[in-house]
Amino acid sequence: MSRKSVVVAVAMMIAAFTSPLDAQSRGKEKSERPTKSSPPAGVVAPGAKQSSVVIFHDTDRAAFRRYHRDHPVAITDLPPGIRKRIARGKALPPGIAKKQLSPGLIAIAPRLARGHSYARVGRDVVVLDPAGLVVDLLVDAFR
Image 1: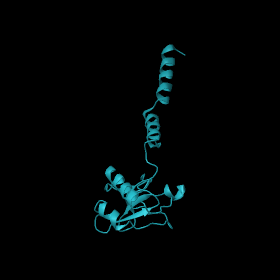
Image 2: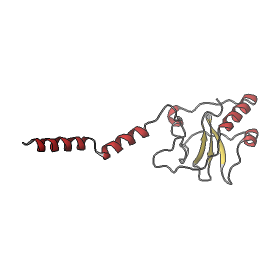
Image 3: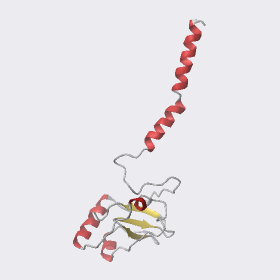
Image 4: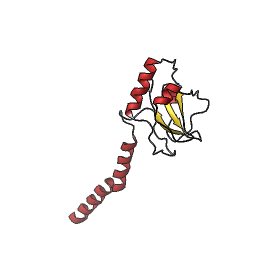
C-alpha cells in the first residue's frame, strides 16, 4: 500500500468519526437534558402544544405569597408523580383536586381572556383555557 493511499484511508476514517450528523445529534441530546435552572414543573411536554401566552410574571409570585401570608389557607401538596405531569399545553391529570382561588387572590391576579380560569393545584396556580388545557403555570405560588 502506498503512502498516499494510507493517508487517504486515515482521512476518511477521521471524517467518518466526526461527521456533521454525529455532532448535531450529540448537541441535540445535550440541549434536551434538564438543567438545574429549569423548573421542575411547567415544562412543555413532548407533543403538546406550546402556549405563547404568558400570564404570570415574577412579581405575581410575590403578590400571591404576601396574600397567602396575610390570609392563610391549608394547602396540601400533590404527590410528586402527579405534580410532574402538570404542563403547559396539556390537560390536568385525571382525578386531580383543583380548588378555586379566593376572590381576594383573583383581584390581585392578572386579568384573563374570556373563558379562561384560575385554579389552585397543590402549591401551584394554573390558568386553564375553556377546553381545560393549562395555558400558564405559577410553580410554588404559596410557598
